[in-house]
Length: 445
Image 1 (cartoon, rainbow, N blue to C red):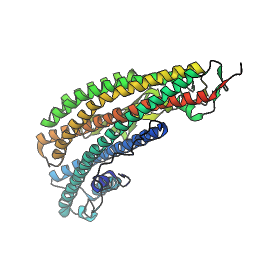
Image 2: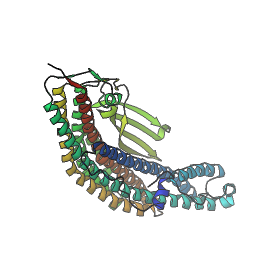
Image 3: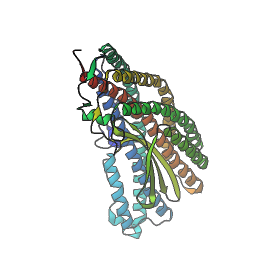
Image 4: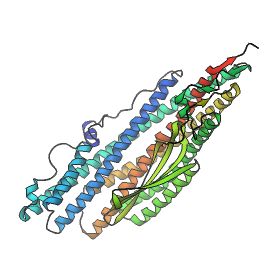
């Protein structure tokens, strides 16, 4: 699937599901297997980013919808200036998401006359509502596709992890069989990529490698903990969606969920935080970093307050990102016994990743429940609602949309990005061991 032309275009133009690149059959093809894992991770991340972009577009359009609806309810309609500003925003979103065919607004001169302004605004309002529905339909299909890709990734990941574990065991046997007289030819390995992989505070050696292995183990524990609390919070979302009420209770449940996420991630290790703003008072964001992990990467847990009218919603996401000021220039060569011990730890981490496969079923069940909730949400999005009671429903609906999106995005990270980092850590252990073994030379005495 290509999403270069926009998510909506991609979902409407291509309905077949793709499983991605086939995993290698031979255990010896470790490098090819790692490349497949990396490629499928990228595919999932690309699709998840497209979904998030579409959600932002839908949120913006819902704000525009509110302005247009308010003006038609007042029996006036928007003037030419307001209509032009709204049209630019709407057409920009349509182009970005790949919604082609026809203009969303009538000609601007229709908004210049009081006689035609109201009818022109009503036409624009209906077109904006239709665009919102198309976006949410595309998001629904994209989430289905996303989880098909996640399933494909998971199958490939654990198959390749099993092959990788055998590779490490063979290296371990090789290190064990080397004579005790084998010594490093060089004290540092000429491998910048490997140095970056195991960097912690500008150092790369056995100690930093062990630190990153330990962090990867903790990440698996945090992943299981967050998945468990995700299931509980998802039940609250589903309950609110069935009634389209209970927004205050849902907000409390989300606050508790956020606390549990932060508590789980703290076990990995906090590296600092920062606060920022976007679009003035409309958005306030804070980011906390956890880690580090291989390749100078860290987890960025983002919390953002988004204001729509008089309502403020809290959004959150978990992403992997690079972190500065920790990259090393060189990596220390390992001695024979150090290679053996490092490989033992690598095999142990690989075994922990294999055990993690059992938890994937729980995440899949949560996603399935949320997909059904998305159907309910979509049916409500298609309804034109008015009146005070319906306005409250609309507010809860926005909240549910945001929560479903946040949990789905988080489950994607828990299913792909996090275990992917653990796999890459195991792979890096093998690379470090291989490079160090090649650097060992046996003396004549």
